[in-house]
Image 1: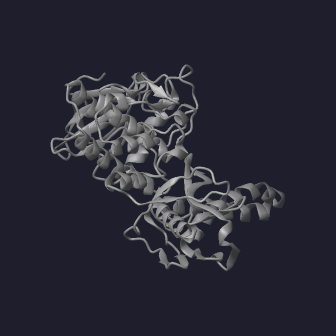
Image 2: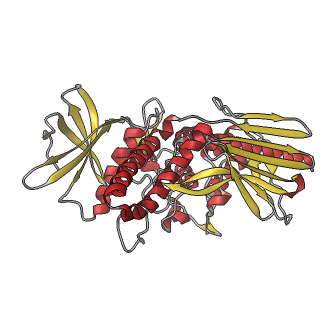
Image 3: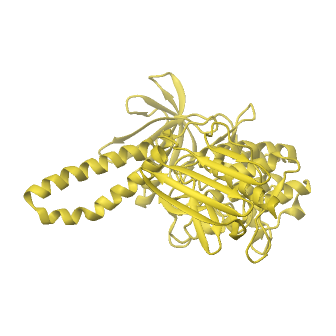
Length: 455
């Protein structure tokens, strides 16, 4: 640990340590240039026993640099300092004044239902923002220690070192696994994470606030945390928590937006999926059209028409656009070079051209793709077109088994991207790939409600 008064990068003077975690020690520091107090997180090379810890640290810096939300500390700087005996990796962010939620519980504070709902609402609003990014950002380590409550009651979510990381080590085989025992969902222990993983961690955090006990100390019924004997809350909140804590991701709320809507709606209208086998159905909340969406949806008792126009190059796609442009320009250069000097080597570039095309595909869909879905009482038609290439699917409305938001099979930075899925018999047809998760959930809810009223 560095002594108080140490100056790093000729700018940041260490005041006192704030805490130590698996990916570094955080200090309160004085920025001599801006004359402001900041939080400075330091990872030393000598104290790093696993290179994956350094990878997590750098990942946190890259992630924070792209995030802008009032509930997330603002990124300021990232640098490294080399000395004859060591190397220091430093991340600077806004200093969050307040107390972690676990400290409040340790001070014998017990949270009532109203307070827990307010905390859940704030965290869900942060998760809605993270899940609206492209690709969605999964925090993977939501817990009381990483939620700082400020004097005005506002929460700050910290420690993004685990975001989008791959956790494939077993608990006994490595100390660099992502997450915290008691707050990690079952799939995260197996190295798999989805946006629903953060919802589970939030549910476990709320249970801790209500009971004052770590979730891993509570009994489980069929792998689900059995918290009800230890709390006094309304049945509605308990049922909502039960869905957050479902062992399987698909049994939780499909997104933070859906979970937030369920929490805020006293008696939410429900729509039930129609299934081919008549098996138990899934409850889905109906959403209003998201503000700012350019999706057109017209619905009458007998007909529904959905039009998804070109979405344009959204801010969240700029990083992908820049990388795709760089990649393909590099391929053009090498292709021309090899075509002149060594034509056979052009064949070795074919796999790289495939990657280049796959990088450009989502950009073309965003700029030029259009989808029109028309559903009537008897028949439906799904028409998709982009750059003169079109695909049309027609069928019987009665053959539609379900409409849902599901994993598209595409992953960016190991984070799955989601899409609307029209289940027709044994076939699954994807559309709305470039929409935000909130828009996808709204479309799925509207379609399910329309199909339900046709029955």
